[in-house]
Image (cartoon, rainbow, N blue to C red; front, side, top):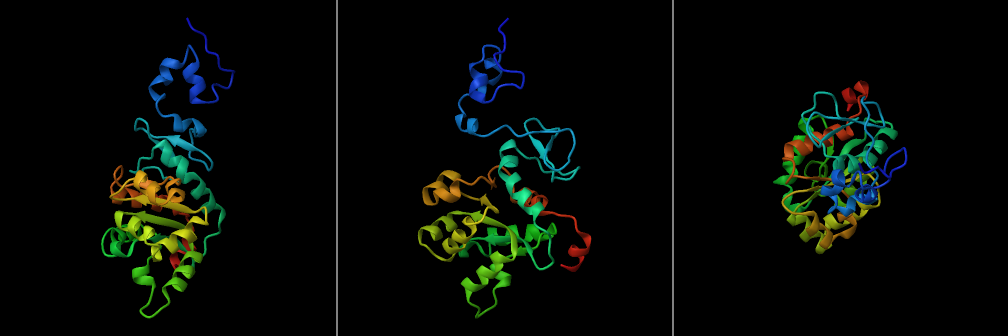
Length: 241
């Protein structure tokens, strides 16, 4: 019988496991996904305490510590890796009644379509959203209002659609919002009706960020995951917000 070549703590990477005579058959089917070798495997615990995640009952899915028990949302390990830094930053910031949960960056063409759908789904889940359609008064200086909205939002989400990609290429308002959001770590791209490959062609920097994709999760599930991501239970502040 082949003997495992790993030290007592296990293999340090997927490639090391793939080269091990005892473990290569178990890891071999993942050999084509070399991009995962640069990421450490997420740690999972048997409890939902801060700093860990628990395995869910679904095969291949996990439950991050911020997702409440009984949630119908199912997360992939890649989603947990992408969202954990954002969640950690949310937990470090003290909630304030004058701060919105999320700033929604979107293309002008999507304001009555996908952007409004996402906004409505988030608000129905108790998330406070900065949304230009309701937060920029007629006659206001749009860029100034955007600056104020960014400053008073805990997390930025970018709804990446074909319209947004065109706006970024044209260096319009959406491109200016995106530049400000990219300067912060609290940014979650939501790809809708397009692909990450198309995004990387237009904005490699934004395309390097991992987020959520409506091709894998319906918009309602995306909204649920975002609501769980930003939810901090402070009843007195929520009641006055």
